[in-house]
Length: 174
Image (cartoon, rainbow, N blue to C red; front, top):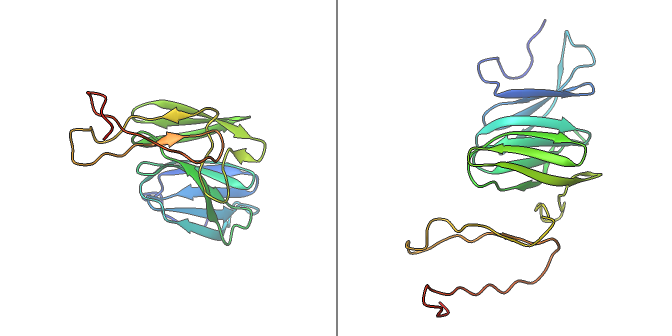
């Protein structure tokens, strides 16, 4: 058989959906046509990953576990021009992803995360690229508050205006 796309030493993960093979390298995803498995043809490439570690494909979407950016959702309806459809930032080092019915399962270095998916794929807002949690969530800040600055993330079940007020340990507004 003829080799097309990345060599075995550079492939980090692969998955098949229909006649398409999705092969992930560290920083890109290769889309191959397997209509003739003895001579796969390249259909397109998605670049922009940091450290890809897992890939799962279903329909028009590919779900990529990226160790730096969490879950990256790529729309592959037109495999010649794949584009980012959304994502979900995990707590740490995202390792693998799998989708079953309406649940997206994410293996992160620090936790196992499940996300609810909609019938069109992951609950992704194509305009902003952000997944919508089922309830309001406030995540642990990073780094700790004793540093000169900290990052505070939150999730809402719908687009809303947010007013976040920070208080010190004595209850004074910062």
